[in-house]
Image (cartoon, rainbow, N blue to C red; front, side, top):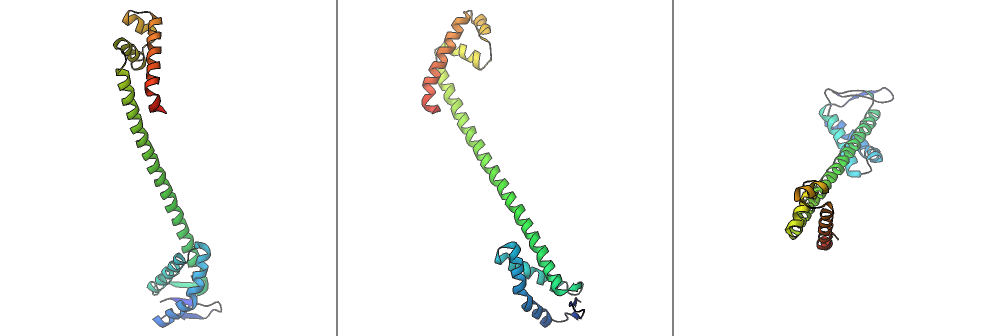
Length: 181
């Protein structure tokens, strides 16, 4: 049974539905306005107040209110409103996080596709190089050999390696110019 004490210390028991409905009718719009000060959304405010009254009715046999019913209802509306605001804030942070993750994954996937396409185009362009120049270029760029090591392995001068790499780079820049714009 709910014991309700007014500020003047008179106590009431809500024994029947009519008493509860009177309380609801007398306080509902006032409490909705109060909730709306926090939530800034009338639907959410009404839902909050309705939830409080439902809880009050469902727990009427267990609940003991030791303050005035007004104090109890206003405190309940305030606490419930603040909890909803926290929940909304958490949902917004989660939405923002998910949006960022999706965008980052999309960009990463898109960048990966572009990188694969670029690598394929570079590989095809390298294949167009004359055989000896291609071999020297691959040894330098893909096997990370120094010019001196390439010169020794190919039995050519370091100057020849430099010239072949320079010509390969010039050819690649020319062939890939439109693709890299």
